[in-house]
Image (cartoon, rainbow, N blue to C red):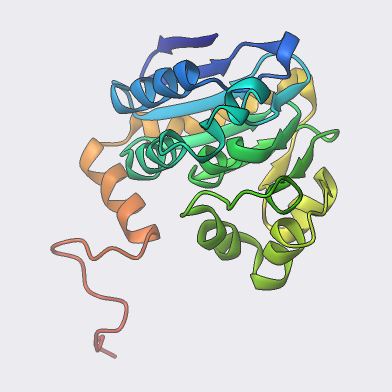
Length: 217
């Protein structure tokens, strides 16, 4: 149900459970973590099969405890810490726990018909620990509260305006566009790619002048 393909430094990870809206089981989460941690190349693309990226946790497993499992945070952490360029190609709606891995990615593109909602308030769960901060960093405090506290669904065009999605792409061009975004990262030296990713996260890289240092005039 998690399909992995490698080609020329690019690993594509596909959630392939379209008959269940690509809802995620614990076994699938473990497979996603493994696919990220063992990725050999310079870039990762996450996408889904069918017309929904992921509806979040499998309902039966959610009731049995998956909704609050540490596996979600392990997956988000693995994505965030990857030295590869990480791109989510959202083939459709993103909901619930699947938000974590998407928020942890470097880039997000989506089809125009995608919708975004994270109904933890309605379901009585807390979001994954790192999700509110990552969401706030992308869209700001008020809009993060619109999604998490007011349980609002966000359409694709609004998601772009908010900064949740970086670009809208027609379905037939989605994977090609994601692959094109990965070309420079795949061609780069691993040290350069990792260094730029670290600097974008605000991490000090040895040998690089700090942004608050006194620069020569």
